[in-house]
Image (cartoon, rainbow, N blue to C red; front, side):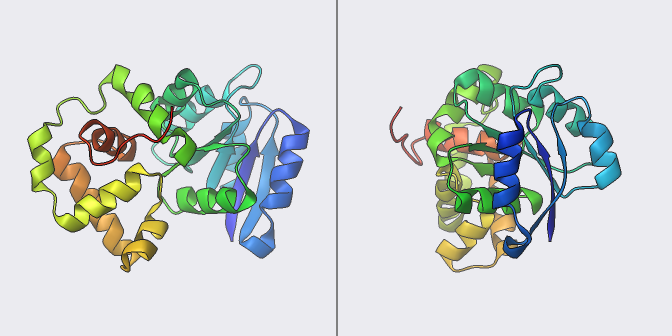
Length: 219
């Protein structure tokens, strides 16, 4: 059972998420916060496996609450669930340390998959925002230093994994599509980051788009 802390200033949104993240689907909503102020205390008290965080809240924003959580040596990963897909929102959430980004109009099945992936230590990027990850990360140079020639160091299977990562697929989906185990995919992801001299999954996605491994779909 994956224990979830919901953080959103709108009670109706929290009610909807609680209805989606039910025990029969493998989730337990351990608690709720209506603002970013009490997130750290609730994390200490409830010890959730993942925090599902809104971005724009009065007082302490979800971005700042995420940053404070990620400054700790230990703590649950954060999945940002937002109605906003603008560059500033995406950039702020990623730089604050969010492990995943998902739009609030996503179907329940995608919310299940995203929460499970992030709770398992994986990353998640909504396919609808993959193109915007470029704008979110380029200003800070996350892909800077990754030379085009490094792409030749990847094996054909690592290239397959990188393509699927760039399309927003979590490790479990990649494993299923390639017919390998989750642990094998994690090994490939680690190898990709090491060979390309990149710091995280989002930077690898930027590299993939920048170097033609995949092409943006739409605006």
